[in-house]
Image 1 (cartoon, chains in turn green, cyan, purple, yellow):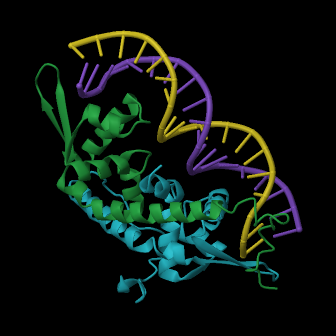
Image 2 (cartoon, helix red, strand yellow):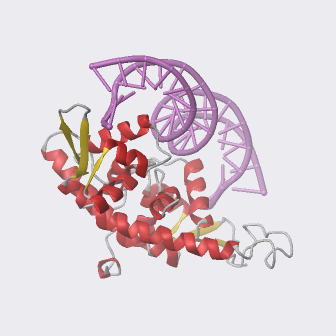
Image 3 (cartoon, rainbow over the protein chains, first blue to last red):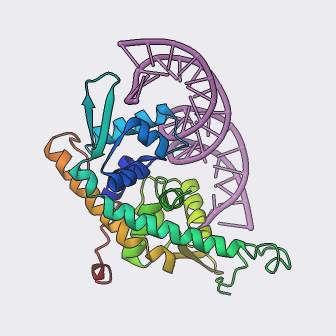
Length: 127
Length: 127
DNA sequence: CAGGATCCAAGTGGATACTG
DNA sequence: CAGTATCCACTTGGATCCTG
């Protein structure tokens, strides 16, 4: 077990980083707001993910005993420590996405003159 | 699709970050060396993970056509851009682990990334 | 409104045997 | 040495319906 392993175990998964990221920009979000912020998430996954984040002390869950019920989620101090890295990751991912997009513009027009070369025959191979 | 999503898709998984991390400390590693560095990985997972990293242009695969065969892996420039953030993650994870250990949650857990400590080179300290 | 409970499909990783 | 090839267990996440 190492730090990298540990970290990925706790903030890996499909939605955790995104939830932390959104909580950082908005400071506090209700359950329904989170649900709308992540349009593709199901209630099961949202609840489950929030529980895990709470168990790991990355977010704070505040329940208001009202009718109708209200629950607010915000970043804990430990969770805030992850923001710089998520930001780095976000920028890197965005850059790569843009790079891929500009490459895809020419896909199928100029680039495809022949068969795609096999992996082993790449220019990197030393003969 | 957002940057965070993209990034996690490409460096998520059980071994990717660890492989990049080790490649950073050692600069270049052969297949067998990586296998020994990550004692719990199977050849199937190691090969598969390396292929994905290569397809995403995060590592460079250099084949020497010798007998016995030799293949060396190293970080690409894009891969190197990920190191600062993996470092952040590593430190955060280590800190959390130590916090938990002092709470006796993980009694007897051995903390290390792989077999060889792979002393941090001076180049790493630059960041 | 903020979940809980099931059931199920897809994806991820492991064990083992074999190869150029 | 550096992988392939199968087969299989487990985990993750999705769909749907229900509730205090």
